[in-house]
Image (cartoon, rainbow, N blue to C red):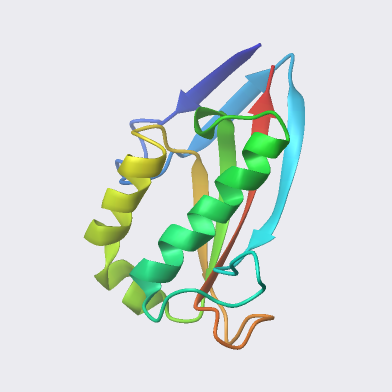
Amino acid sequence: MTVRRINPPELAPPIGFTHAVVAEGTTLVLLAGQTALNVDGAIVGETIVEQFEQVLTNLLVALEAAGGTPSQLAKLTIYSVDPVDYRGHAKEIGQIWHRLIGRDYPAMTLVGVTRLYDDAALLEIEGIAILP
């Protein structure tokens, strides 16, 4: 299996994501959207930073259960009810990312939405991982 992360010089340098990910000879894992739900089904965290940590933890639990590791994340879509708030806390969010995942970045998209399935949820993240 090979995974190549591509950041063409013709595009703006990526900060916290990769422009393209190419995988060959792999197994694809599709990760359902995760919110900040705890095991009891309650949203954890009042702020976007607190919820981001729970959301990312939930996504990584699902990935591990499927046999994957954080470095195998290839694509994430982040749905945020307040993208301005998300960007305003990019430094703290980045610190959580580095602590839980490291410095590997998948291709990512941030989408602003009016609301999510859980009323108290501020974000939801779904993903695709590439396993050997």
